Image (cartoon, rainbow, N blue to C red; front, side, top):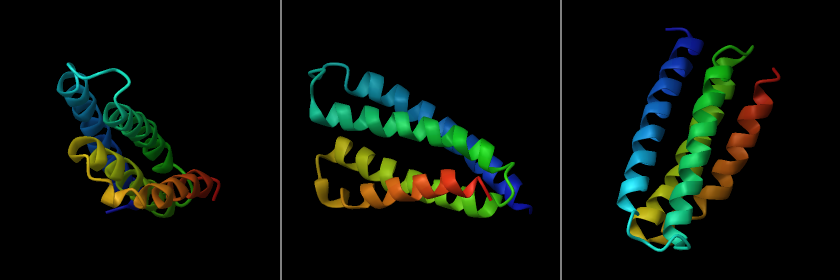
Length: 114
């Protein structure tokens, strides 16, 4: 299967899961304080999840879709995943993955130049 097809499919799954997570966050944190740190973490994770799901669509059409797509997917998993985890569980044990994930996202955007 071509790398661009795999990246497009992952983009579709990522976008769908971002919508699902956003809906959960809108309802799951409904009665919490709007200044609640966990809610803010969740909203940040969801926002970046959406942005990078759309970036994956672009990555599927760049010169090296496997490179850009892999970096973006890794970034979504590490950055958004660690923020979602902390927001939902209150456990900060995975927070060190967030900066690594952020760097992977940046590298993914830059890889689309290739």
